[in-house]
Length: 304
Image (tube, rainbow, N blue to C red; front, side):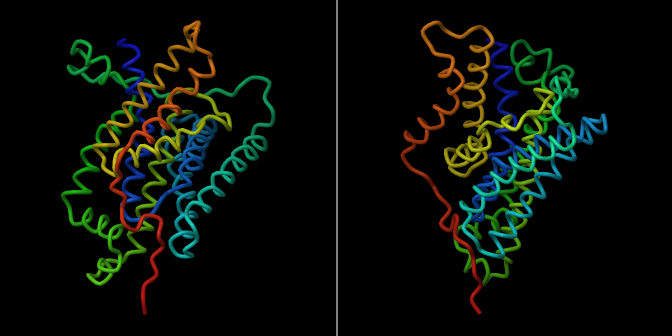
């Protein structure tokens, strides 16, 4: 059980980073529907950066850059060209898959054995890691998980306790009023999408640099969309996102455990693999109310 819970915390890391980043963007009215592609570009950037340079730090920085560039393109098209966010995001997700597959083939050809990189090591925190049960679960993780721990309180404080957070929320609820008060609506939206892209790229790198040590074009497998759903299920609040990521992290940890142990005789292996995604659908259906930002998905055109 301790092993499953430890893995649950680990597997919740990229979902937490991605969903909180999505919370900030959607609070301004921007649905970053390119999140799956951003995750994938981050995973690929983390892999090639580490493989070519031999440095995990370079790999993580490359992942952040890849996510940032994807978000830059998405933000320009949706914020300043005011194109439909869902359509643009869907197209960019397809584009990301094509880019990764093409350049992976160009750079490495068709290797006879999977290319491997070193992964982040676990860093036990002195004293805290010695706490029975909790120490092993929470304080023997890698650096990305500890970064996620810091993101939780920082994101909540910024969003609900600062003037910047008030501006972010105002832009998503009433951009006209925010504009009249002197807030540059499109600049706020553009900036939050870029931040979401950077964190999404870092989240994607977890799967290559922090977990598997290899890359395939199917490595994300819809987890970007799970992070997107967690934002909704958490009612656009970092605290709700934390709860959602732990639930999904636990589902994925159980799924991995069942696969590694042969599963349960009466349960098909395909069902075990699909468990986190089935949970996403079930929780979405069960959710009774959503505190949706009033202008979510609506482009803003300043009146002359």
